[in-house]
Length: 166
Figure 1 (cartoon, rainbow, N blue to C red):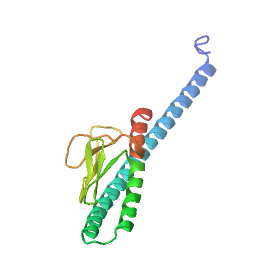
Figure 2 (cartoon, helix red, strand yellow; figure 1 turned 180 degrees about the vertical axis):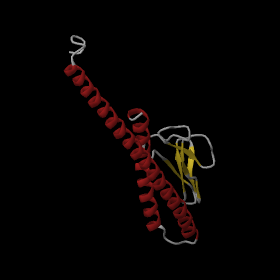
Figure 3 (cartoon, one colour; figure 1 turned 90 degrees about the vertical axis):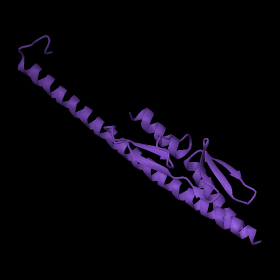
Figure 4 (cartoon, rainbow, N blue to C red; figure 1 turned 180 degrees about the horizontal axis):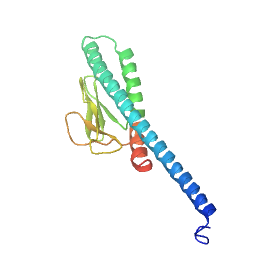
């Protein structure tokens, strides 16, 4: 309308109102997207904490199982607890498990070790200082290089954040 009647005040006000509505909608959508990003980053951090708790528990149970079996005691309840922790861990991240001769297990993610008998490697959560959206990145143990999991809830969260929300 404004192109056909450039001097019309009604057409100008109409264009201004539609522009304001468009800007408001874009701001609202941007705010919702930022909120979703923050939520996903929070869930990544929480899931990483759960993974670290489970791997610490598995390492502790490894020691208890090994000690019990070396002393000739029954460790089936401990093994059941460890199996439950491994199942929970497998839902959070794609893992491989290898049982050792002494009854302990090693847990791998990709080619990296998460649990080796009584040793647990933590997944660290770091804020990316150069990222204006305050995304988090992950590192494995003392390695400073960014690490990216595949599979499980953690991998799905990171894929969702990096492919659908950015």
